[in-house]
Length: 230
Image 1: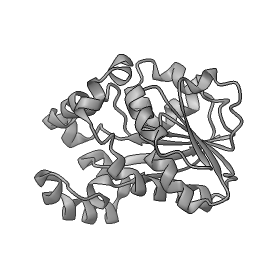
Image 2: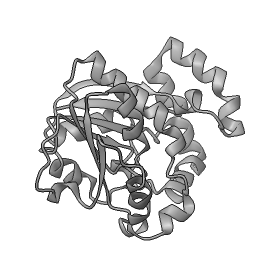
Image 3: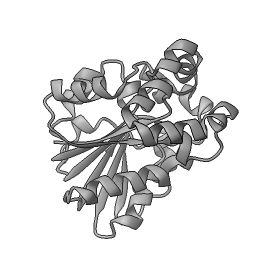
Image 4: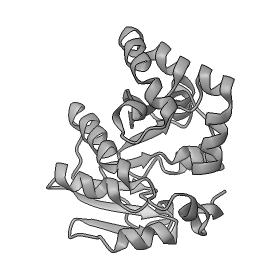
């Protein structure tokens, strides 16, 4: 599967590399770090795409220096054009970097794409004191019943592993991480340009979530899990 990112396949299917979602993701990352008083002067992003998240974090963390690692030459080329004095981009595998001393490493919407995601999560454990993972929760009652949401994610954005909250957290624990904080992010509610089905489900999601967040996420989906771990 890694070859679809190193070659043009993923770039052809996702020409923006989801950069339009970067401000939203950066806001959630800022909040979880600040809420838990996590040092963040040296930030790394593993699988940074075209660099949008780090460039948005520059505005939130003016004293931070940042490095983004990306294996796709297509995404890296676009990120490299936008380097700043405080944010640099590297083409290659972060686990092979000579100097990888960071306060925080970001792993945002990555592990669901990696063929051997268990080995990957273990291999990056020493890259950064703290980790922030963002993991799509593709498994829900409605997604399993309909099947098309899961198959669509597999075809369009390359998800090959599927999680719900408990399996995501237990995977990180099994790989040796301590969970400090976790919270849901609601892409179907907070991001624009949603499909008609997501628009129709907007108010049911809001109402059900107010009554029982965990139940709502398991039932109707449309959420991801943001995890702060060490």
